[in-house]
Length: 413
Image 1 (tube, rainbow, N blue to C red):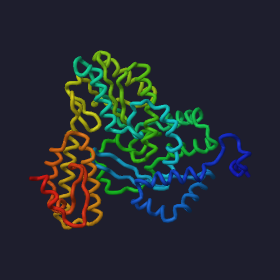
Image 2 (cartoon, one colour; image 1 turned 30 degrees about the horizontal axis):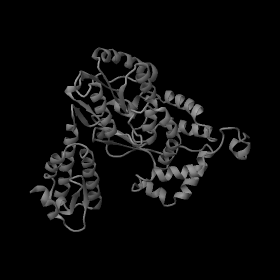
Image 3 (tube, rainbow, N blue to C red; image 1 turned 120 degrees about the vertical axis):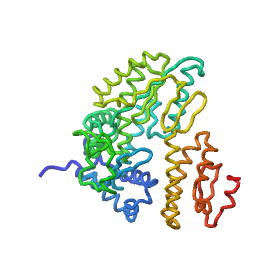
C-alpha cells in the first residue's frame, strides 16, 4: 500500500507539501459568488455551501479533484465568440488559484497591461493610448506613428505545456506558501482540463456556423487552447503574454506600449523603426510563445488618422465611441422593442432590459455622447419609457413600480 503523504501530521510534512486551507477556499467562494449568485449552479451550490465547500476541500487535499462538465454556447455581441461556462464549483477553484497568484503576478506585470487588473481595464487603456500619442507627438506638434497588432486565434493557440512549465517555474521562484506542491498540481489540473470533452451544448449546433476554426476550442491544435469564460484563462493569458511585454519594453526600447489581452499598440516617432519591428515581434511570438500575428490586423499609420482601440476611436484632442458600439446599441434597442410587441415583458425580460441598456449606457457615458444617447433612446418603445426612468443625465435606467412617463418628457421636449 502506497503511503499517502497527506495522511501525515502537518508538522511532519516536507516543505511545500501542506494542504489548501478552509479559509482560502471560503474566501474564494465569497469572491466567486459576488457576480454569480443568480445562476442556477450558484444557487444550487449555495443551498448547502458549507457542506459543499468542505467536500470540495477534502477532494482537493486528497488529490481527488476533477473539473465537472462545462456548458458551451455562442455569444454574438460585441463579436461572435465561443464561451465555456465552468460549473460553479470549478469557478470557486479558479478564484482560489487567482486569489493566491494575483499578488505575485502584479509585481511581475508591466504597468501598461490593462486586461483583468484592478484599477485598469478598457477605459484605462484608452486613456493611456491617448496619453502616449499626445506625449510622443509633443501635444500634436510633431509626427508620431502608431503600430497596432493582434494575435491570430489567441486563446485557441495558447500552448498549455509552455504555459504550465513557465507557471510552475514562477510558483517555485515566487510562491513560498506551505501548500506549494498541491497548489501547483491544482494549476496543472485546470490548465490541462479539456472542456470540450463531454461538455453540454447550450443552444443549437447551427450557432457555431460562421465562427472561424481558429476561434473555437473544438478545432484547436493538440495541447493548445484555453476556454473563454474562465477567470483563470484571462489571468493565465496575461501571464503567457508577459514575456512579450518585457521584450517590447526592455529589448526593443519602446516607451509607449500597451496591451489589452492580445490587442497591443506601439507608439514611436520613427515610422521605419516601427515597420522593422513587425518582423521582429512576429519572430519572437512564434519562437517564444508559438503564436502568430494576425496578417489582416497589422496597422501602421500617422496618429492624425485616428486609432481604433478597445471600442473607441482616439483622435487628436478627442476620443469618440466606435461605430460598432453604436450599432450594437441600436440592435439591442430593436430587440427590446420586439419583446414588448409580443406582450408585457415578464420579470426576467425586464431584468435583461436593465442589464442590456445600462451596459451600453455605461460604456457610452465615458465619451461625449449625451446627444447621441438621447437620440438613440427616442427609438425605444413607449412601454419601457412608461415603466422606467433614467438617472444621472441619461446614464442609467431604473425601474419604478408606478408609471413614470412624465419624468421622461423633459428629455424629449
